[in-house]
Image 1 (cartoon, helix red, strand yellow):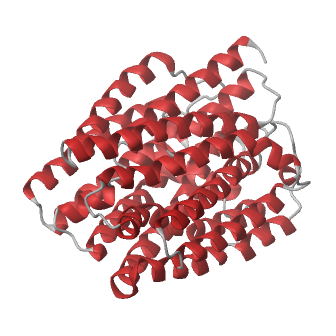
Image 2 (tube, helix red, strand yellow):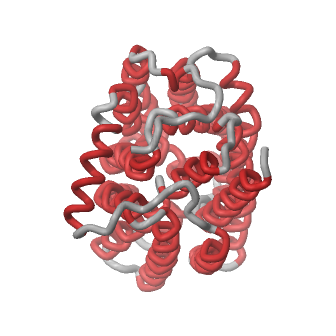
Amino acid sequence: MNQLARRIQRTYLILILGNTLAASFIWGINTLFLLDAGLTNFEAFAANAFFTAGMVIFEIPTGVVADGWGRRTSYLLGTVTLSGSTFLYYLLWRVHGPFWAWAVVSILLGLGFTFFSGAVEAWLVDALHFAEYEGELEAVFGRAQIVGGAAMLTGSVAGGYIAQVTSLGVPFLLRTGVLVLMFVVASVLMKDLGFTPAARQKPLAATKAILVASLDYGLRNRPVRWLMLSAPFVSGVGFYAFYAMQPYLLELYGNSKAYGVAGLAAAIIAGSQMLGGVFATRIRNLFRRRTSALILGTFLGAAFLALLGVASTFLIALLLLILWGLIFAAVTPIRQAYLNDLIPSGQRATVLSFDSLMGSTGGVVVQPVLGHTADLWGYGGSYLLGAAVQALAIPFLFRSRAEKADADTRTTSSTPAPV
């Protein structure tokens, strides 16, 4: 690997480290934070659904920003938007704001994340191609998962225990501060390499041009289409499973104020993510086709969620959470590499954003449904239903496999030529 490729990867890992650390300060206590503000289970997960709705609404426009104005510009806008909306969340908690206000700010949070989704990954892949990197993309994404897992482990444990000794609002202030710092870091380190922003056009014309081209390489690209259509089921359930685990573990633990234990749930996922990143390339090499790993991983993930639904003790639930997190983390780099190898540079950020949009769409519907299920039949019942919903993704993955795309068996970094 040459020096430029190393520097690009190092910058990417720094961005992943900062983003994940900022986000993870609140991951272990977010649901508890919403419930402490006076929301019901349904309202808390409805607020999360508005967050994912914001991602659905803004994924394509912010993808167009990344493909039309530059990936760096998109990232910087994301840090500004997300830090401001996080601070508004803190203010709503202080005043026990009405649900409609939580909904509005949750949408703004979704907007902030859409500036990141697609843009950072597209920046990495384009820059690596510019640096003539010929290694496996799974290896790069695997390293990112290790770094992200370490950041998540640190942030989630710290956030949980800081909330326990101070208040549930302090981790949100920490998140705001780290995001401001990342704006400065990205301003210095992040350069658009291997990518030329589209010629300046009127906003609507630019949006239409990039969106049409992206559809050609997205939903009209059959292997990509089926992969994207599986996303709502896996991502929607994943959002719920992670955030519902906080009150579920406290319920099994027997102490609703043990916020450190809630942070432990996020820490376990972080540790699983790190291990998954370590073994991602090895797991990929066990299968001739990437889709084989995705299909098996989706099935096992659904099975572990079902077992979580009938877990009777805190320790059993922790073990199942570890296994679920390991499976999810191990197949994520494989899915990322597969998708990136199916799309060209010029439309990469928008297509990746559209893929994120599909996953967020699932979250808009699935989270409030499963949250209401938890109100009616408890968290165990909601996990059983969630397992059934995730299993619906498997037929779509089989359809993507049936297309026999070259990217399904490719083992080195190589994508379609820029358009």
